[in-house]
Amino acid sequence: MLNKVKITSYSLFFILIIILIFSLSLVAFEWSLDRDKKAQLHLHETKYYGNTLNSDPYKDFVVQYIHPYYMFSLPWQDEERNLSNNKFVYINNNGFRNIEGHNNRKILILGGSTAFGHFSTGNETTIGAYLNDLSPLGVVNRNAPSWNSHQEAVALFKYESLDEVDFSISLSLNNDMSIICYERDIGNNKALDFPENWSRLNSLVDDIRSVAKPNNSNLIKTFTLKVFPNSYHFLASLKKDLRNKEIISKAAFGSCSLTDADKVAGSFLSNQKRMSKIAKSYGFKHILIIQPMHITHNTALIPKILKDNEAKFKRNVIEKIMNSQYCIDNRCVDFSNLFDNKGFFLKQYGSISTDSILREKWFDSGIFVDNGHFNDRGNKIVANYINKILDDSYESIH
Image 1 (cartoon, rainbow, N blue to C red):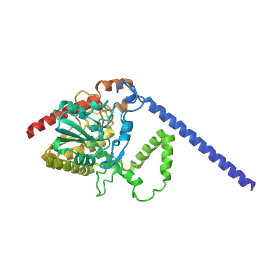
Image 2 (spheres, one colour):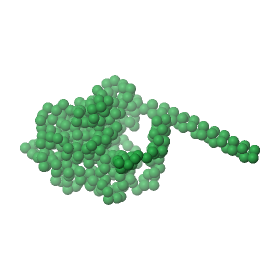
Image 3 (tube, one colour):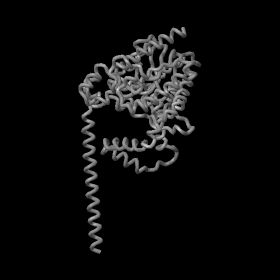
Image 4 (spheres, rainbow, N blue to C red):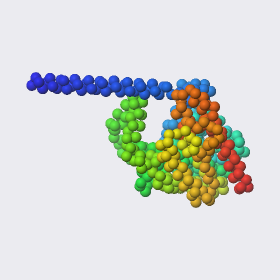
């Protein structure tokens, strides 16, 4: 009996030691990740926004607020807007980034966070605001971070003054590809254009009339995320890599292979067709502009494996779209490699933020903050090119 007690005591002691070692190791790992994270100089910690800031001015605008029309959108209720708005980002009472228009005839800018102007230094340095300064027409934002072409179509349909619109512009595609290839089952016959995080929302609220059941796994995730945020994100990324390991040889981007380009292009075009029909019914013109993406630039400084997989897949989708019957019959413009061979430093800020020399080079001639977002320089260039397209289109219809 005494031996059993000793064995149990020793076992408990060793278990406690193991738990202690694991906890200390986790704390040390969290500390090392936090140290590496602090070595990076984020944009708001530079003079990019005029002065160094204590926090990212866009942190409240990556939150997805449930919306009665769009499923998710920007903070659109007064209390949320008032808490989120700051000197760099101002959302108006329509729930979109404000532009001071100067004409009753309108251009609607549809899209995701690129059209929204994530990382611009103010409302006045977004693509829409720059275009508003160039065009005789007034520009109206109907865009939000994470939006795909389905949400753009809803936003166009729900715009309250369609009879005042001359052009609608869909500056788009990247989100459609990412959501389909990372969140949807490309192999089944269900719709592929669900908004981002639809599956997650559905898992939380399936039947609104039912009583919510406690989810212990969610409690554990919440605790871990709060106490060990860096470790949680690192392990989540590692889990995602391991989960996709079996399909990496077959897949080019997420779960999508090169042969899935037709499906992705078809899903995207189905919403462009709907927007074009809305435009024609109201007598204005809808223009599709495929947004610039860092990875689709031939001179982009990216690892070879990305060029051979993700870049190839995205270019394949773009080719399918541009060669489609829709783009033969309607105005489609490919900006996916807009900044190639123009003397710009084509490296993402996030990949060089720890190198002071490369940071200076980026501030002098860089464009991309990450794969789909630009600095003010990039926004202004895109706006100038859009204005040229509108001038040509305006002449052709008058």
